[in-house]
Amino acid sequence: MAQMGFYFDQTACIGCKTCQIACRDKNALYKTGEIFRTVDTVEVGQYPSVRYYSVSVSCNHCAMPACVANCPSGAMYKDEETGVVLHDDDMCIGCETCVSACPYSEPVYMEDEGIVSKCDSCYALRAKGESPACVAACPMRALDFGDLEELKAKYGNDLVSDVNGLPDSSQTTPSLLISPRDIAVQ
Image (tube, rainbow, N blue to C red; front, side, top):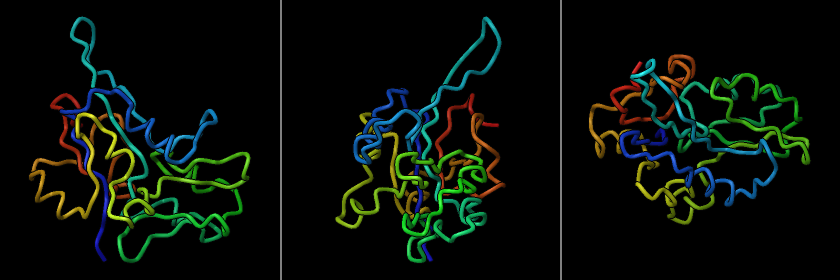
């Protein structure tokens, strides 16, 4: 099985949240709290030497996803062909166990529907040969999506999955490759 995931160039990200807005628009997420991709600002240092950087995160389509391992109905599952973590709305019982289990807080309870939903890496767009909405929208080209081995070959060997502001990658082995800012590395 291939493992697909996201690449994030933290050195290029300006924190504009265009990726976040594109995701919200593509998924019609207009209620407060319904969001599949977040862009957070992380501060480091102490006055007068304070610095900050941005972290853009959605579902990391983890190799060992806690949401899948803890879903009692089987609604959360890994696509066998791509390794992407998907959600079957018809099987979801709305218990929010996956929400609690994910260290990245990525599955979202959709109150009006009574079920959980999440980033599917724009599965339908990718099936048509397009990029995920967040990737296509980024004005700085700080995001990419694809097979992890191909992303490593394309972006180099200095990629990490652990930066300040994110949970320790050993918890779930996220399919997230980051070109980190020097101040962000744990």
